[in-house]
Length: 201
Image (cartoon, rainbow, N blue to C red; front, side, top):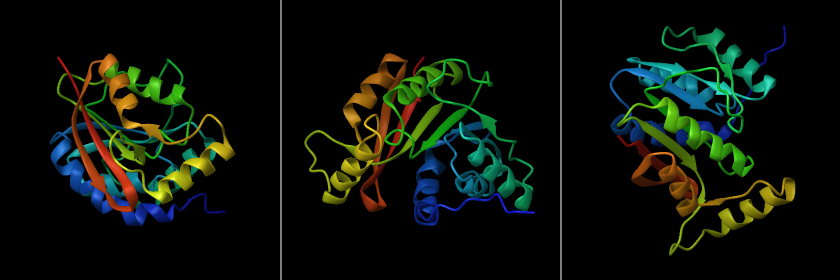
């Protein structure tokens, strides 16, 4: 049988810093809905780091779903649920509740509609006080953008004109419109940020 697992080298570099932020951001128990889980490597790692939380990965692409399932078969974690097929840009998601949400490296590698859908869903699925945590590169007002991020942004836009680094202020404003407030912005390795938003109410 072929191995459907996919590998993202960046995961090994950023998973520990992401987990460090999540230790303070996530609840002690409940369901964490991960949007755009990619290869599934973050889901596997974080489900092990946070055994008191139920991890629910998702992705719109069938090959990513296959990778997540293949990784899950290797480790067989009791708190890791089968992946859901979710396109963040669509209005109907096959889930009606989450106690926290995580989205790693999607906002810049997707159309803006995906971020709009993500915020809309977070406003509906999360209870008051629950977090939505975003990780990735952003452009910040008043902060010089690293040359590597400028080059990355240009490359993304060449690949798809709907992609590209987003202004953090635009993302935060969009979140606010769906009832989410900005709690913290953490500087991360390789010129990335982890952004913690909380459901108001």
